[in-house]
Image (cartoon, rainbow, N blue to C red):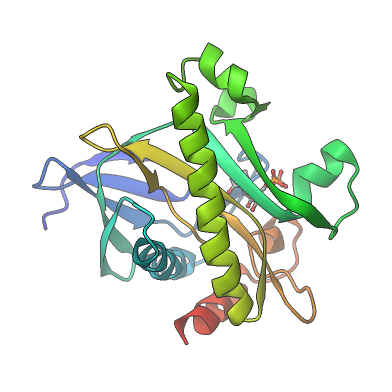
Length: 236
Ligand code: UDP
């Protein structure tokens, strides 16, 4: 597979064209950003870890019937993916209150939610990725009808069910995470982007130690050491 011109550079990945029109290569970067890129950093090796963690999780989801853009991992830092057109919604799934949820609604940090919460945020850096509801999605023409929104929500819940049980076996609590979906060449909605400690909150089951990007957000110590621990646990 030939890596050709760069199509796009995001905060966590670069996307490259390939010699197949329907496939792209995602190169995972070592850069770290938080608070809408107001805080920036970099840790050598972080990209490789996220590429490996994402590979394990996409393979797990595919095995459980979730359609994703993942094709295969090419090497430590590069993943071959189906080309999709990203739907500009960040789908956030929450099991435990923390982060913006506690700030917005005053739910105490660490409270287990009485039911899984699925939220939509409008993927727009200039607007600061605002929280939106189903009606906003339609007014903004992000999706054409309710069926797509219901599909996104049900996919997100299924992903949560698979990942939560999997992480639980690895002694990790899946606190919350963000998903992105895209449309493939046939117009089907499939899971895209990445699933890694950059986009998930993972706490150790016994100690609640944070093993995710909150270490960077809150200056809690090495991101790489934590992501290595996550990879070690889920590789077993
Ligand atoms: N998240 C993400 N990218 C974003 C915003 C959030 O990956 O642009 C993830 C974040 O890592 C967490 C979940 O989505 O796992 C919920 O984040 P929250 O809304 O609490 O945002 P934050 O606390 O980062 O402001």
